[in-house]
Amino acid sequence: MNKKQRETLQLIFKGPIQSNVKRKTIESLFQHLGAEISEGNGSRIRIILNDVKAVFHRPHPRKEIDKGALISVRRFLENAGIKNDEI
Image (cartoon, rainbow, N blue to C red; front, side, top):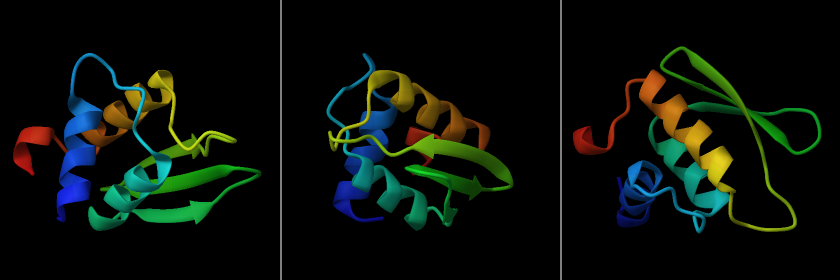
């Protein structure tokens, strides 16, 4: 895991919820963790990680995801068995 991916993981699990996490860094983290990423309808992406499935919306025109989406990413990673202190 590179430094940027580690920082992204820490931001995802950091409290209070952050509003400056960029979509591309989250997708890079997913790829590093071994997730299968496929395009969905419109600006959606489908993610499968450790047999856990999720669909996320790519934000536009902003590059950062909103707080609600970050909470969803956190829950997805937790359900997939990923925790900040394990990486």
